[in-house]
Length: 261
Image 1 (cartoon, rainbow, N blue to C red):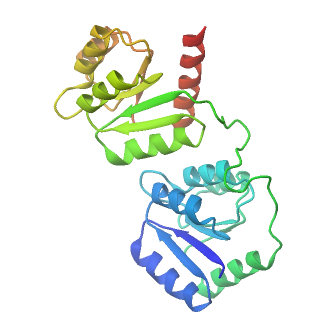
Image 2: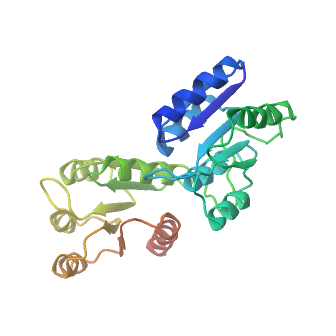
């Protein structure tokens, strides 16, 4: 049975499309966010993925980038309700198989999927994980993400794992310090505002422990006093939320390279 993956933050749309394609003989898997969708993509290796463009957190374009990191040839059809021309061009630059406007007849979508399925599959050397250009593999360096927002934490861990880092996530400074004692990471991505012990206090503890790794702060705060206090503890960089993932990756690479030097 041909596997189909649907990623759409609207549960009703997921259920509707699942019912429609199941009647056409597909094995349908659904996810309501990008992180869950990527996990299902990795687990099932669907023949076709239907991807909503506009989703909170990890949007369709970001999800498509991660799919391309796993499989550059995977057929992906984007549903782009309200998409701008720029967004549509970005999707096409990522080799999207088709770009359909939301609200079209379901028959059009079914025909589009059937058309893709009837085409011969493009071969790749390893369909389970094929890095795209600029994607790191087997780096081996450990990055610890400390953030109490589950969605942010999982997004960063997922993003870094796909680029070859050994990424781990915890939601509190206490848990992070315990991990540092057991196996110090090469780099810590640290949110300033955490339940219980703050990020600033955690940095003080790290300095007391003479932690040899790097620290990059990620924060949505614009409180100058708090930021000044954080800078006084000598982090390698401070990045503001929402985090620009590509900029964050560049900073991490630079910091780790400089640390080795």
